[in-house]
Structure formats: structure tokens, C-alpha cells
Image (cartoon, rainbow, N blue to C red; front, side, top):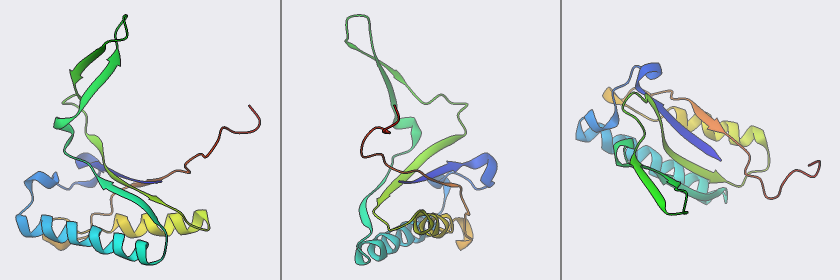
Amino acid sequence: MVLMQFSSQTLEVPRIDTWQPEEINAHIDFMRRTNEKLKAAGELVEAQGLAMPETALIVKAGPDGAPLVTDGPFAETKEFLAGWWIVDVDSAERAVEIAAHVSTAPGPGGRPINMPIEVREVMSEPPQDL
């Protein structure tokens, strides 16, 4: 799984909801082209972008199991998950290559954002040593 993290603090890049429309379009076009290349290579399983964190809800079960819902994440949160790809690749090295490419997505002024991308294996079953 390739996870796109966004942090305006560490990236020194304004949030995407403040970019010019042509900058947003260039960013989204980059992501679409990336998805098309991964699909053509037979590596794309799933890819999704997420709405801004202000739309998120935090849900936990109350004592009776009924949902308790609060807004979230909290306003002081500076990092958020912006989207993900699930890829089926032959090696961890290939997943890292994909992550490095995604990191270069264009931001304001067309400059690469170089955002941190997390790569994690999706477990198909629990580890055998448990």
C-alpha cells in the first residue's frame, strides 16, 4: 500500500484547497497519468484520493455499542492522509519506485511537492509466528 501523507508544516506547501485551479488540475492530471501507467503495467489494484480532513468524523462505540461521533481530526493536526494506492508488484523495491514517483506530484507553480509517501505491505493473513 502506498500512502500519500500531506503536511503543510514539513513540506512548506500550502494545502491543496488554496491552490490555483490550474495547479489543482495539473496535480490531478499527474495522479491520473500515474494510475493509467500502473494499470497498463498490471500493477494497480486500487487508488483513491480523500476529501479534506475537515470532512472526517471520528467514530467509536459507546457503552451500548451505539456509535459516538465527533468531528475530527482536531484542528491542530498538521498531517493527514491524502490518498492511497494498492499495488500488486513483484518486489518491495518496485513499490518504493512508485512511491518516489508519486512524491514528485506537482504543486504550486508546477514544482514537485516531494511529499513523504509511506509504503506498507498489505497483510493477507496474520503472521505465522503468533
